[in-house]
Length: 398
Image (cartoon, rainbow, N blue to C red; front, side):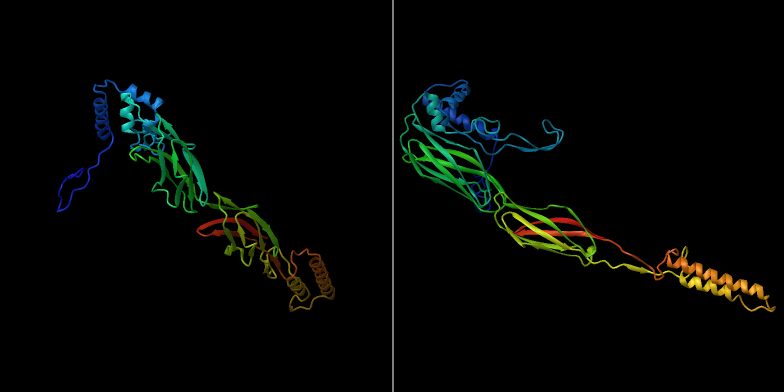
């Protein structure tokens, strides 16, 4: 017997399972259900749809509502209802939806409901169809068991976590009820990555385990994280000066770990240094960043005696000396002319000395000092386990 395998023997072993879906599976399966109704009632049903939707109102336990998932498929941009590409389809939710209709069917309940036969059963519902939980924390939901058609048996509860919900566990308390009542679903998470998926709570009749109901709760787990911010994004210091900035550390999604704080200085800031106090914060809080600016040294720029636009002391005396000693001549100058030359030289020396002492020459006599500002960034890093965040502050030292 091969069952649903595509061959009894393939290379000496049983063949693989065939898989089908969509209307190719749904239509023939439901045709078999209607055949059971015909057998139960002894007559044909005609258009069975109105009777089915009526049961959804009068006996909702006949259907297992599907609230998680979708029937989306990839689509090509420009095709009908797919103008931007991506996916096309519908998302399941509470009650009737275009992805799952009324949900899956309890065939025994449906056959008895359509044939008018009293069928003791129960209904299961959750106070919330979805839970959002911060990683490392827990949350609860209330699941209600309601007796239908005189149901009075005991019911056992179990819960199952979807495969995508890594690091998530669940429990139901109490694990058994009689006829009707409520139980508490508790969902526990670790501080792992963000995940999402369904948790299914199933209730099974103690005397007839084939009689069961399932309710799904969509669970989304947010991974804890931290934030790091500086009060001021920039800082300007004088040469050798000190500046401070306030750092704020915050917890996100239930984060409560210890954050180690360090800082580093870009090479363009020279001998500038930084420190953070305190060096660690638990959960959330503030810290102070202290920056010690580098001491800037100027460049000494000397002037030549005949620099453009500048008369140095050396130039003054050289010019005066030329006037006083013009050079040897073959003819001896007249006494009056030589006296006038010496007098003129002394006047020039006095005038140039006066200009030099007043700064009129545009030079201190030794040179002019210039200072080049430094600019760069201070990077503050907050680390907690695998979490790492940075914030940068622009710094200028004048």
